[in-house]
Image (tube, rainbow, N blue to C red):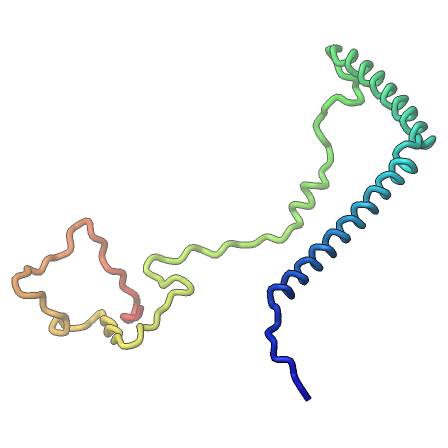
Length: 174
């Protein structure tokens, strides 16, 4: 059997494909345009050009209601200039005690007292970071020999009169 060894005309295949896609797009646009124009004409003929009797009745009723509202506003406007209000709408203090009784029945919450000075606040992290040794707690009756000596060349200073004394607790506990 013999086989054809000629090369495929790629340019012709691409051109035919593009022409086919263009033709399909043009037909699609033409059909949709036709249907839209027909739909618009039918909508104009059936819906927009016909006057509805219900719509006319609603418009006349609305005009009448607006006229009565305008008359009522004119009457109110003419009575606004009077110096005294009618007794039915005069402001006066309330004699109703029910709201006060309701407030007395609500639960009373006693607020927590503020923390004493020197106490650790709630939620404070008291654990020492990893790799850092926590300092030893100071004892109230600890001898002076356990305290660190000041660095060379620095004279020890005593707290001034305006510096507060450290708080102490019973039995030397913090």
